[in-house]
Image (cartoon, rainbow, N blue to C red; front, side, top):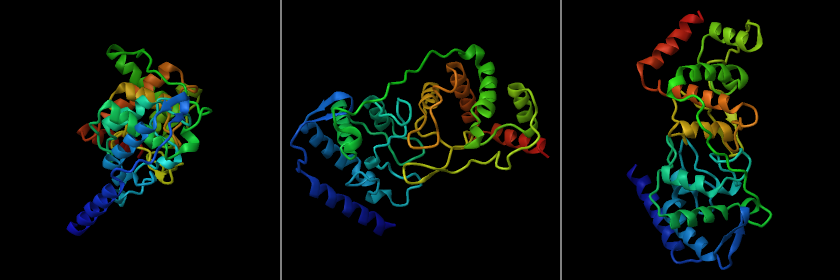
Length: 298
């Protein structure tokens, strides 16, 4: 372990020394959305990236930095031009604000730490990161997606219980979330939900109903959809984050945008339901739910 740490430090120091003082950019550029970025900003961004980001994301921004070896969650490959957690419908280019937010917050359950950078530093490193995927980000013809706003919560604490119940129905029926994630109700309850939604009970059940299903991604690795009662959600800190992630989807993965499929109230309802599942993590109530489902299905 000491040898590995020494090699990491030596490699990192060599990289830092080699990049110190080198200005790569000599011309200003126009980024997506018509954003004019000065060469000085990009060169500052390169220095910030070298100091804070290169160890994991690599010299070329391909996610193959010396510190990325053995990571459970691979470092983001910026050369692909795909960001997972945007403020637009997945597949569209996100706005700078949400990229900066995730740099400042970090991503839970991963090696992506929160970074205490100034606004100038944040702006510079975000612009530099874009240069790893010039065909995606650079040019007058590149457009940003329409920014999604968090709407007013139609439920509130007074109607939390009804929101969770509606969310349970939408999760298991309309959105069929268990096709990637897992179900959180027994066969009988699922059958009753099906009757409520479609007028008839279910008689056959998917044998993988209570398993998360690995999914191929455009990021070059297989993604494990979270069990909401067990795993951390990388970009989620509050209900508003849940709403936005459901509305936007997750870029480069099988998690779609639900903005045009579910009503706004349904998205909020699923957010409430998922939050209720998250609150079971590391509690006796989670064990009780799992045992209840197991007993009911005997």
